[in-house]
Image 1 (cartoon, protein in one colour):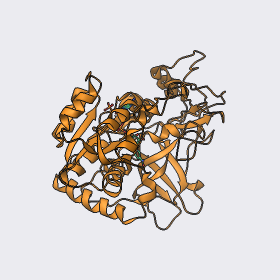
Image 2 (cartoon, helix red, strand yellow; image 1 turned 180 degrees about the horizontal axis):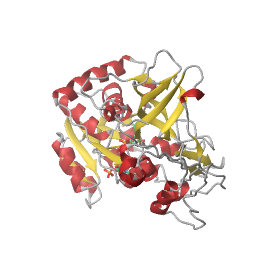
Image 3 (cartoon, rainbow, N blue to C red; image 1 turned 30 degrees about the vertical axis):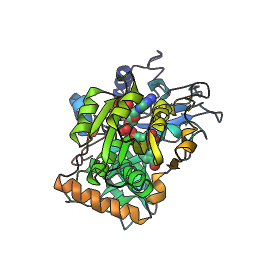
Image 4 (cartoon, helix red, strand yellow; image 1 turned 60 degrees about the vertical axis):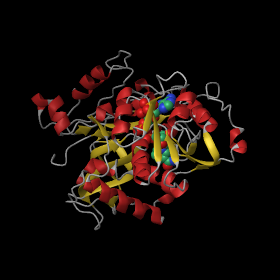
Length: 421
Ligand SMILES: NC(=O)c1ccc[n+]([C@@H]2O[C@H](COP(=O)([O-])OP(=O)(O)OC[C@H]3O[C@@H](n4cnc5c(N)ncnc54)[C@H](OP(=O)(O)O)[C@@H]3O)[C@@H](O)[C@H]2O)c1
């Protein structure tokens, strides 16, 4: 038995209200589960529709939400839909729901594992995967497939002798479901009893932190006494850039979008932090914070901040092109046009874009893990996670990144390690 619900058409009504969506989900029969998946999108730029499904297994999160029905599980899946046109930012209405059969141990084929999600990672690059071939270095989501990304989970059954029930695993093909069956290729076990939490494998030891390491250490050749400017400085990548740079004796200036974020970035060692949203003359504020100019700009946001940074670079300065989140929802009409591009020539600036996945097989990764895990265990590195509880909140948790509504590395807690079926 299955039921189909729509975020936009719950009980026949058009709604984007997650509350009614949740109520509809709870009405689902036993032995079903929920997942979040891409429904379809046109091949034309910016045309997409995301399908959202989410599990209701008896997790701590779900117990809290559905205590009167404790122990039940339900499944919601998406029905068919027509692609919706996203001209700029995706909204919650672009996620849809479908009922699918719950995975079982018996269904495992060779090398497959059954994983229960503990944490899913909300990362800006997922936006690129929702936009056809436009502006992404990762393949587009396949229409009809669940959303996938980085995650940490617990193996509940395995048809690969390298994985056993109870192993905690991580990887970048975690499906946005409470449980999923998948080929174990690319999944890695995380050490148990290391004193490092499961969520840390998406945060301080995860992909964004490694991106900070690559952009600063491998790409930018930082030297003590130099000045680095970091945008989105309180975020998943930025907070690690700040701390790695301070540890190497750099003068660190952060840009952040709220006073709380400014305080946090100062607390982790930045010498000056500017709230770029409330500062009227950002160029003047950067000049004041960096009287000797900027040697390294760690670029996370693009747009106007990039333009202003260009005007403040020193001769032979370096820019690590990590990302440009301010432009991910832009259309050709709204994309920001850089005005100070000639500064690249005048100041002989080197701009190096990079993608972290190119570095996992290089010594940089081992060096990163050694340095950061040691410092984290000693308490010499702070890492702020921003945890949202409940798979049903994952779409909004992702969309928040593009509004600056996250504070730290955004993860979605799906279940507890101690949860059982
Ligand atoms: N190249 C790679 O391999 C790689 C790997 C990981 C991440 N990245 C990139 O690194 C960047 C940061 O990613 P993250 O995971 O660390 O995200 P994050 O900083 O944790 O979250 C995104 C932050 O970006 C800022 N932001 C959002 N919209 C903005 C806008 N229009 N203008 C200015 N700032 C805006 C907000 O911070 P404020 O409130 O401070 O504005 C928001 O909190 C992204 O561009 C991402 O694509 C690249």
